[in-house]
Figure (cartoon, rainbow, N blue to C red):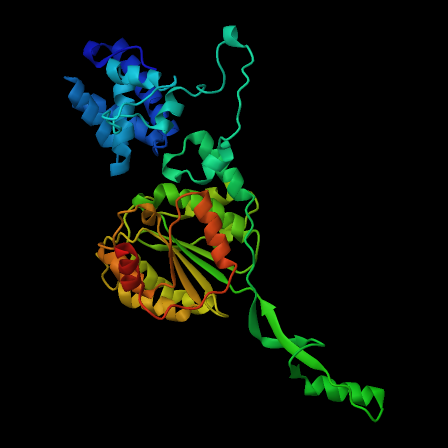
Length: 416
């Protein structure tokens, strides 16, 4: 942590070198807290401070803010990290108080509570044990309490700490997707089949040479349908899409005929990258080949590209389609409804996974949501481990296609 405050900033070479070092350490704290801060941004921040000068604390704050923050959801973590790292006594006292058991008053504000990811970045050793002087064994009664794994099942991905994210990824890697079997057009020999195979019957009669003709029967072959995933990787979906890619990697290596596409402002096929057995290698390949990560969203344009270039290749034999998106479209739903309708008619079932559905007050007010909702067979939330298990169970059973629009059904359920 920094040993100097912005009130003591001077233009001496020794002080400038110290400030450059502190900016490097500050960038590492932001990166550990989850912000995409690399060496390039740290160099840009140092140059920006040299160009803008250091005349006041506010100027220094906004100079670093302009370099390190590029999304709205990063502002709170940056603000907390800046005031703690560059010595704001009030927030530092609040940060240290979180390391002890506290009781929050009814009227106390919750928006000033520092992020758990920032706590892990500034105090990486907290919660792993006490001082050496207090090494006595403490025995507590755990009857009637929830285990950490049970709590983790219902915890939102957005509110997880770094350690909890790692544990959640380990749980996801052990998930298995039950395979739903559907009949195909081909037939296979089956002594209890409902169809008589005349060709096999005549061949058997010629081989036996008897007066009786044994009847040979056949039945339709059973095979699980292809699974096609369209995953939104825009800025508003960044935290969830990273966890869902671990889930998709597990599914891809657990069954065949899984095709995965990610989209933001453009569509990218990442199927062959997720087939690497090592999840770290697979996600590294995805990061190298996806250029629009954490940017805007053009759902209509990307679905149109999928329908034009990929639908005939991957949507055969009654494919299931998972659409993972919050429905927030940069183009305000332009052309989206026609493309979603075409996608719905080309697949067996269209399941929409939306993390915003976890909110009780969620209403389909966005133009993108209103365009998609009437053309999906199922509308589910995906924001924690339990919701992922529910999705796996939904894919394991056959469900009829919806005949009425989900817009009216959704409005009726909310009204009830």
